[in-house]
Every structure is written in C-alpha cells, then in structure tokens.
Amino acid sequence: MEKSYSQRLHKVIPGGAHTYSRGDDQFPSNAPPILERGEGAYVYAPDGNKYLDYGMGLRSVNIGYGNKEVADACYEEILKGNNLTRASLTELKAAELLCELIPSVDMVKFAKHGSAVTTAAVKLARAYTGRKFVAIPVEHPFFSYDDWFIGSTVINRGTSEVASQFTLKFNYNDIDSLKKLFEEYPNQIAGVMLEAATTVEPKANFLKEVQALCKVNGAVFIIDEMITGFRWHLQGAQTYYGIEPDLCTFGKAMANGFAVAALAGKKEIMQIGGILEEGAERIFLTSTTHGAEMSALGAFIKTMEILKRDRVVEHFWDYGSKLITGINTISKELGIQDQFHVEGYPCSPNYVAKDNVGNVSLAMRTLFAQEMLEKKVMMPYIAVSYSHQESELDITLSAAKHALSIYTKALESGLDDFLKSPVIKPVFRKYN
Image (cartoon, rainbow, N blue to C red; front, side, top):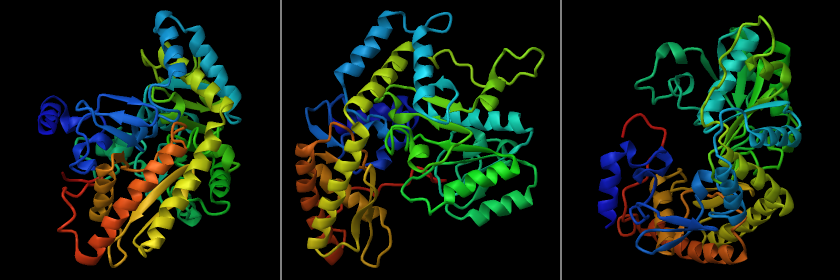
C-alpha cells in the first residue's frame, strides 16, 4: 500500500508533495508516505497507524492539529463569504491586531506564503532606497523560491542570473563580514535581511550591530520571522532580542496551520505601496486575490487569542527544556553524549547526530529518525506545539531510549545491521 501511495503522488505531483520538506527523501523508509488527518499532536495514516508528530505542519501548527476553536473561527468566516469584492472587516481587524501586537509594525500586507512576503520586502527596500543590492547571511538556508534568493544558491537551475546577481552574502554572527559588504558596495545596498536566530544563537549585540550598521548606511533592516515568529515570543524574536526592524515578515505559526503570511513594518516604508499620495510613482507591492482570505485571517485572530490566553509560547519554552534535558540524560547514560545531543532554544530544539569520529552524519540522523518511527514517533526535526503535554513527553522519552540504544549499537558495530532505509538528503542540494 505504501508503495502505491508513493507512486500515485509522484505520478501527479513533481517531488511527490507541494513542499520539498515533505518529500520522500526527507524521511526514513518506515515513515508513512501519506497522511490522512491530524489531531492534537498526532497524525494518522490511511492504514490506521497513529504517530506522535514533531514536524507539526513544517512548524506551522503551534496549538495543535484540528483545534476546534480555530476551525470554528475559520468556518464562521467561510459562511460570511470568505473572499469579498472589497476589503473585508475581517482583514481590517487582522491588520489592526498585528499592528497592535508587534511594536515595530505600523502597517501590514497579508499574503499566503513566506516567499511572497520576503520578495515583497526586498522590492519595497529597493523602491524606498533607490538601490539594487540586498545582503543576506550565507548560513540561512531559505528566504524565497523567487530568483533573487534561490538563484543565488546552488539550486539555481531555471532562474535568471540577472535577478540573483544583486544578492550579496555575509556571515551570520560576523559583523565585520557585513561591514565589508557596505565598504565594497557604498550607497548600493538597499537592505539586509536575516533571521534573528535559527539553530545558532546570535552573539551578544550582533543583531543590534546589524541594525545600527543598516541605519548608518541608509539600508532597510529586515527581520524574517517565519520560524521565530510566535514561538520565541508572542511579539516575535525581535522583541525577545530587543531590536526594531524597519520591515519584518511572518508566516508559518501565525494561524495554527492556515495559510497566512505577512509583510509588516514602519509606515514611512510601507506606505509607498499605497495609492493615496497623489502623483507619486507607484510600486506594485503585492496584489493577490487570496492574500486576505477571511477564513485564514479568522484563524489568525483566534490563534493570537489562544496564544495569549493559554500562555502557549511559555509552554514551548517549558516543554522544550524538559525534552532537551530528558533526551540528553538518556544520551549521557548511554555514554554517547558526544555523538548525539539536543541543543538550541527550548522553544525550538535541534538534535545533532554524529558518527564515531565526531562528524555530523545524515546516516546516523536517519537511523535515529527510523528508530523513533518504530515507536510511532515522527521526529524529522523538533517543532513543539501546545498539544505536546506531559503524556507526549513520556512517549517521546521512551521512544528516544529505544532509538538511542540502537544508535549506540550502530556506533559500536557499524550501520549495516541497523539502518534499513536510504539516507535522508538535504533539501537544499544541487542534484537529486
């Protein structure tokens, strides 16, 4: 049955899914090839198998699958018409909510996915400054599938070299590398875009130094909050780190899995995408039929209510801390703490799998994920939700104890007797 589903998917969908992160090459062979539904922190395959999930809709589901309050809010908006001929009261309420919630935000444009709003941020920075170059950290793997970004990576097939030649790279946590770019391209850099944090914590004052450097050089300071937004802090990583971007982008966890993304920021920049300034040259910022779809924005409004009411972000930090301590304790007891450990922010932990000589190993990571799946825990990475509670923690630690015992044996005698799957591959690679 599994082979049949996989064949059917690849027959009609390039890559077998609409996001490469959901592809077959991202999971061990014993992962379900297709899912039917989700409930809370669990997902269900058509064959009836139930898995405790840590993918959580590619980090977009932060409360839990099928949350009734969010679903009802979405349904109420559908019954109102969902997509009207003029701006809806729902999109006004949603925009006002985001502006009230995030201190740096005066105006917002909604869209359906992250690539749309990051590309719009670059366009807006170029229009505002009259410059062409944008600088991004080489370590951050993804900002957009549009040519300005993806064409600057090794996966540049089908892109325009002209579009990507104005994308410059610097090193995250190395302020001198960014200073060097400003020196090499004086008065030519429109903006600097970066994630405030991913698996690597920013060095003391690094983000504030980037902000100051942008201000001195007249560049737009852009923080991409796709991953950090509504996980690090209710007001985003920008508040957590005490910085104030000129523009910021949000997506993923905005609406508990519903399709909402946002470009937001200071009025002096955002308003040039407007129509009120008589005689001003226009910028066609974003203009999408479904960008302000009422159902998804209703889900966003209700999600924000739940995050505040139930202190959901605080739960991420608490649960993640227990998970990190629990798994690392098991690893230490087995004497493999140098080969396997969980690190990073408790609100967004990251597990590191290494081989005998201390090299990060995709093969060993595949083995761990494979053995977690044997205990019905799907952990391609770790995205915590509010539905992960004490019982889920117990299940996870029990599965980890099993998986890491197998991991230990593989370190001692080799992978051949234990790895039953092709090794997972990086999403961002040049060749299949």
